[in-house]
Structure formats: structure tokens, C-alpha cells
Length: 136
Length: 75
Image (tube, rainbow over all chains, first blue to last red):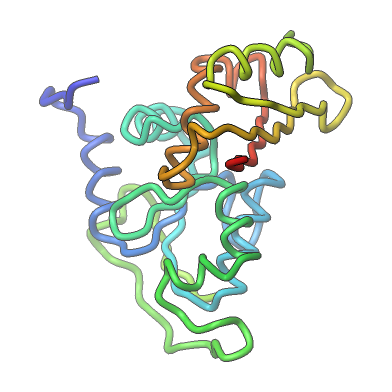
């Protein structure tokens, strides 16, 4: 379980993406076209908070999921990271959304008060993983 | 392919004083939903609580268990 210092550019890229994006969701498909019901529900909860989030589609390359799960020690997709820490998958995110804890964790107001913020541009450094920043 | 009873028993024997309710979500034998109550969850974050349950099935989730939905509670 020790951190491997071996050359692993993909794992490094995933770690960097998690570090560089305050809120980042690894999912199947894209926020516009989720490819799995669990990813869809997680995206919907996130979008409902109005918080900006980056999204990575893990489907194009099976190694992304492999490396991600090795890093996070979490077997399933989606995985939501906030502030560099794994917050949870679909169950935890939807449960936290329903209780209002998700807004708190993301630092946004309750849904009624949350308006759309200004658009964000994609981080060019995240290009290898195809990260897009999203607004709910 | 694990059954709901097997999954229930494995959770209850792995986590101290746990009671688990397990249902086959889709009827297909590979999507499960478990509600687990255990005093062992006290003081843990949700992610830590879920990891306790997930760890019982390490290697199987994503394989023979396609989807595993968890809800954790303290008694």
C-alpha cells in the first residue's frame, strides 16, 4: 500500500488533477451525457448545488480507473474529490446532498440561494485527462 | 455470484456488532444495496464508514458485484 515512486505518468496526472481542482468528479461519461446511472445521479446532485466542478470521463482508457482506484483505495465510479480528499461515491454524495452537507462541503449556499456564477475556463495543465470545468 | 444472504453474513461477521439488510437492487444478482448498522461507525467520516463495508468485498466490487450501494448508520 506504500506510495510508489516508480515512473507512472498517468497516476501522477491523476494526483495532480485531484490536487489542482478544488472539486473534481471522476465519472463514466460526461456531465452532459453520463454513461451510468450512478454517475448521472452524482452529477445531478453536484449541479444542483451550483458549485463549479471539474469532471473526468474515465471510460476512454481503462487505466484511468485502475490508477484512480489504486490511488483512492475506492473500488467504484463515480468518485468525488473535494480539496484533494475523496468525499465519496454516488451514495455518499446523494446522501450529503439531501441532508444539505454537500453544500457545506463545497462551500456554497443552499440550492434556493445558489445562482449560476461566472464561467470558468479549463485548466490547460489538465489537458491530458480531458478535464472540463463545469458550472451547475 | 454472491447472494444477498451471503453478503449480509459477510458484512455481519466482518464488522463488529453489525446488522445488515441487503437487497438485490435489480434482481440480476450483481447490483446490491446494503444498509448496515454498527457501533463501529461511531466517530468515523462517511467515507471511512463506507470503506469498512466496501473492504469486506475488496476485489469483488467492479467484478462479480457490478454495483454496491451502501448506507451506514450507528445504532
